[in-house]
Amino acid sequence: MATAPAATPHAEAATHFDVLIVGAGISGIGAAWHLQQQCPGTSYAILEMKDTFGGTWETHKYPGVRSDSDLYTFGYRFKPWHDAPIASAQAILDYMGEVIAEGGIDRHIRYGHRITRCAFSRAINRWTVTATRLADGAEQTFTCQFLWMCQGYYDHEKPHVPDWPGRERFTGEFVHAQLWHDGIDYKGKRVLVIGSGATAATVVPAICADAAHVTLLQRSPTYFFCAPNRNELADRLREVGIDEPTIHRVVRAQILHDQKMMVARAEQEPEAVFEELKELVRAYTGQPDFAFEPHFTPRYRPWQQRLAFCPEGDIFRAAVAGQLSVVTDTIDTFTEKGVRTSDGTEIEADLIIAATGFNLSVMGGIPFEVDGQAVNWAETVTYRGMMFTGVPNMLWIMGYFRASWTLRVDLLGDFTCRLLNHMKTRGAQRVEVAPPGGTAGMALHDWVEPETFNPGYMTRALAAMPRRGDDPKWRHSQDYWAEREELPKIDLDGEEFAYA
Image (cartoon, rainbow, N blue to C red; front, side, top):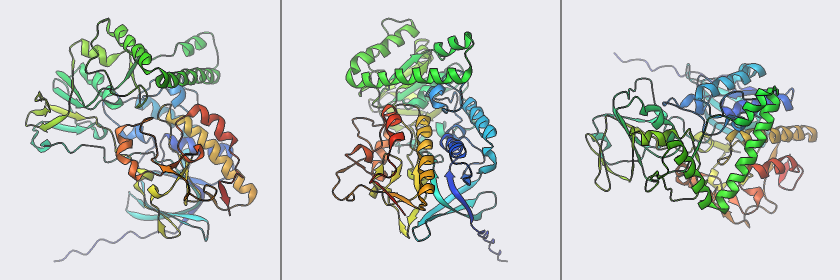
């Protein structure tokens, strides 16, 4: 007997808001707080695919998961941080939960909504956002005047896994760090970790004490900054009774000053900076003759990719203690017992953890349309890494790579609210950005300069990213210290803005 087809969940009537925020991660929650504070009376909702808030910090479950930026700057400007500078994922989620509760943001979040389409019509100056409610598969329709994209920049469901030969032959357990789950047991096992970035730097020391042995296999080394996980200035200010908001402001300012100096020195005197980083390793390992060649000497200069924080030199101390071996090579093939590298080295393992990064996802992979025409982001030009030619009434939060992501959440929160208030004052229903005279005469380039910042996830996806121009207005600056002065001074009636 034939089975009747399942009924298709019906689409409900559209629900309208002034602003729709996409994503309840660190960016979306910050955006909501700024919107409430600076644009009172503005109706909004947050659409979140997951069943809870947190974004990155909810996705990642691997051992030791923690921030790779200090929380005095990764935390919000408006919410003091009281704990260790480098925080666990749970501590960050607790912090975000406090922001949500204190601001009453929870009643605006609609969890379990996967957006399937965003379409803007200039005829009515509205976005129509279609989403699937995951609990029952019902199609939901929302409309808004302004769309605030805070969904992050990588695919939370499909990490980057290279197409390694022979992976199906491996008889042990294989997992990508992004897909870690509670059923994975590494205790007493030989573990191979493939990768060399911040994730590998976190996982390796977290499992070394319980694993039989850990091997780190990397294509190329990364830079590590070894330091204690505490802030002496914050500790001293607390000791003398300074209030927490003041501590947060002062410590944040000191860290930002130090980071600015470090970034400048990394460009101007990279060899000297590397020598200082090596000296910290020697101090924490107690080995003046610690061997950096070949496994701890990167092929690029400091800060051309992220500088991984290494609390108390933990990964180096694990190596000195014999808990960790490092191999620098590429993979020839997986075998039944592990992998064979290009130079013929056989690495046997019971568990292989891929810490090979993520896949960059432009606008969450959501199909966009403007006036019925599909948006190809690679054919747009970015305005300061936040707005895009041909796409009205939308802003994307893309944070910093050399400074804490959330610093830009605060800056763009200020800018977006100022823009929304300006539109209200003008009686405008639409705003677009375009270079004077259009983009035809503008020299266009990739989103970022490879010589400035070139991690794998970015270089793999450059062809899908929006374009940048030569003028600083038409590029994504990685300079927080410049943008904190420039963004508040943007003339919203400047020639790059068109209102209707």
